[in-house]
Amino acid sequence: MNNKITELIESSFRDVDVELIEEDRVRVNVKQESLLTLLNFLKENRYSHLALISCVDRIEENFFELIYIVSPYMQQDESYTEREKVNVILKTKLPRENAQIGTAIEIFGAAEPYERELHEMFGIEFIGHPRLTPLFLEREYDIPPLRKDFDTRAYVEEKFGSIPPVED
Amino acid sequence: MEVISEKQISESSRELELYFGPQHLGMVGNFSITLKVQGDRIVNAEANPGYLHRGFEKLMETRSWIQNFPLVCRVNVIEPGSIEMIYSMGVEKLAGLEVPERGKFVRSIYLELSRVSSHLFALWAYSKMLGFDTVGQWAMYHRDLILDLFEDLTGGRVYNIYIWPGGVRRDLPEGFEEKTKQTLHKIGNKVPDYNDTFFNNRIFHERAKGIATVTREQATRMGGTGQVLRATGMKYDIRKVEPYAAYDQVDWEVPTRRDGDAYSRVMVVRDELIESVHMIFKLLDKIPDGPVYNSIPNPFKWKVPKGEAYVRSECSRGELGFYVASNGGKSPYRAHFRTPSLPHGLTVLEKALEGESISDTGNIMMSLYVTAPEIDR
Image (cartoon, rainbow over all chains, first blue to last red; front, side, top):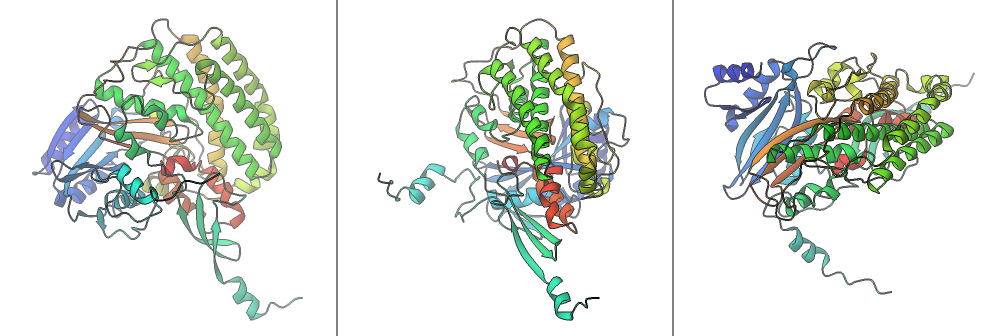
């Protein structure tokens, strides 16, 4: 079953790199342009659960690695199959400067909060997202805080170091 | 007969903005919702998380693999066990560690105890929300009995850090199994009272039936898992879909309901609580002898091999996932938790609140089992 999705992706897309990394984890490296097409393809093949969108800042190689984790919901209410164990880990690279990618909301409604989070934490622009407003953070940051070049200690010293300690 | 003037009609149809939480009596946890209301109907809801954002995922990148445990167990305050488990699973996958058979059983028992305590906590919050103070006090008392068990296990009542990579920290203490059975019998004996006072109560039925219905189509579109999905009839539970720990060693059922409303979700929580209690008895009967952990390298110098892993488990509120990347260093390169309350508390909640009454806001939020700390992390 796990090989099936691997073969299916390989036969339908030419410029992707599919790899079965574990028994039930399939890793797909995809170019930025074909990401949404591939997400749509997976959804049509009943991989309809977008569990997570994450991002890793590979600062040494100077790119962001965007990670979409897609798995199937159950087809029947009662029975479990090997198919449902499979998680597809889609990965795509974005340049660190001016990172932009199309939103996946049209395909997976679940993408909305994750894209907001990544916009705030990494400064990635999701084109077409209706609500890229602040989610968790209180202040504005020059460098989005989950990027590797954001120095937490230096920020804290600069921002709060000048506040005198409370006298008793 | 009183004639309603045109002015009064326009007054009542005027749209107002209402800030619900974080300092509101009807709000559980540090969370706020901005409601647009017409009369007492909610037209539009916008969730505002962030009051508990502690930046754990950033902080985890600077601390060693073992030092991260005090952080991860605080991701969710009401059920820290599941988060310890998912973090350990991620590290084990990266490092290629195996867990001995008895360790798996002890993990399952501990996780199910956590689930029972979490569901009791939710029952406390939910019943208080509907004005059932007595039921709330019972639930809190029974949760406290479970916390006593945790105290026997590790010394800590809320944050236990019992699960480690490679197994659990130590074996069950002397007499633990007997004490667990006694406690669970005590809780089980109270179930008829819970039913009479709360679950079969007409007030609960009228407040919860038909309220905030999330259909299966809506739930799957918005990334719903856990009770949100099981209340629509799908037996989606990661413990069955992709078994971990010892969940494939015993027989148990996934409770479901059909209607997808607040009533169904709360009843699923109740049924799960009972199912978990039964499961702990079965696990205790089948538990094998042997070691409970495989030792790990010196934690101060431990370098986890380069790689990435995505693991998932079923916590009390839905699917809990964890993406972790290591570049072979002393600390994670990137750690990201997929917490069920993020989709439930933002997209699903906003959708479910539309068209409902202001007085049901807390009711709906608790029926979705939204816990603020795990949204913010």
